[in-house]
Image 1: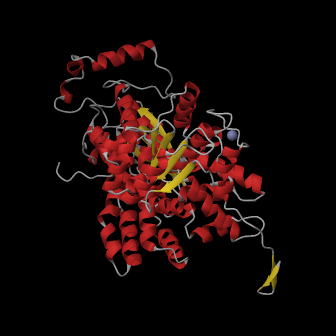
Image 2: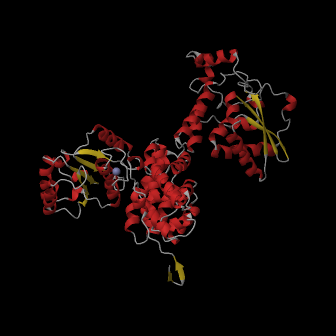
Image 3: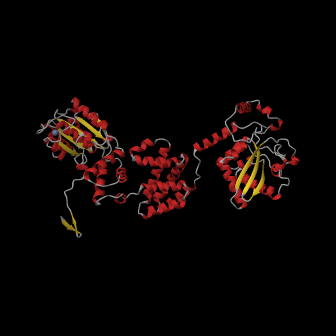
Length: 584
Ligand SMILES: [Zn+2]
């Protein structure tokens, strides 16, 4: 113990985690089962090659596996796939001080002289083990002449010599060397197994740290176990007791992923104020705005990958808990929105990178993003079109009086009728009045009083105000919701009592179906409430439309003045896309 800054600090001999927990058997190696299994089988069969090349990204276990293989070959109980780890040879290799196993860093021992020396040395028999084993790391760093010198030994290797090469860049190793090696390609290690490995080590070390933090560490080190362990070392050395997530974020100098989720949510909700607040927080926290920009892009890209159904691809670089969260967020977004957002961000990426004021550029990008019209998801469009199709196909034919009952299951009679309606000759049956018009009664001008309207229910004196009010309301509806207006074509305002409007509609089953939609009722209610400047309740009664040809002079004022509009299908499309007809 010694005194430092007035505090007693305990000094311990400290072994870095990566060394302390280096796997000593094939079973302990994180992932890479393909490679360890092949080697195990080769050892059992006595067919281990004299030159083996391990290639793969950094920190995936190349030299670790080479060392275990060296142990397996030189163990007193060997060659065995399970080296004992207690014999002289095994212990020497574990300690990195074996007399017959040479670990050479190709980056610093890359000259031809060094390789010649190695060749001379290789001629002599091993001191006390079956094999002299040379493990050359980063073998691609050897010079051309060094490779040539090495090649001579590889062509006729002494039976007691083995070469295990490791490289992150196998394409830089000459083909002449490659062709004389058995090659094992190690793959990237997915995040989840690394997190599992870190959890195991933290458990053994008695370190309290959340899984979220371990996931962050694993993710930041991009699939390298060694790097993940040295980051964990760093985090552990900066803290006492339980390690908080904030501390980990601070030590690593990274941003919490929540920020990315919140920002994408605010853009989707077009909440530009919130988006700018988040950006401000990022800026204030001292995080690099340019780095943040690419993080947002990566986040959107991940969402898009999930949206197009290729989410499996993400599991190697993102912890499964976060993939799940991404899936939830992606469900709220359309593929089109994500494509648009990504294109927009990519288009302005250079501006952010080279600007003196990346924050302002980024703010502008988010304003643009939030203003991007949010397209309807295609599946929602298809659903709407399907609904419309169903309504059209179940529509009653001309002049059929729909009884005022709730729509129930189709009766046989209705079924037959529908078939008749679809048959090619049905057009003739609908009568001459329909020539050139869609075979629907939605747009028909109803000039007269409906026959089925009992005289006592018809307002004797149509209140001038009420009729005029209804005309005005219909004009507003016609402007805002053409489809709704078309379906109110034959309607009267029968009563206004306090805050209750009673509307009578003469129309077909389709009229009724469209008017009974929640959206229609909500729109109608809103417009009426706005019109009367108070919250209005709407009550609609329906009468079947069988009034064609009634004398126009007895008609109610509202219905007679209205003209047939466009085809309801057109109106429905306008309704879905929020469009307007500009040339009829
Ligand atoms: Zn042993």
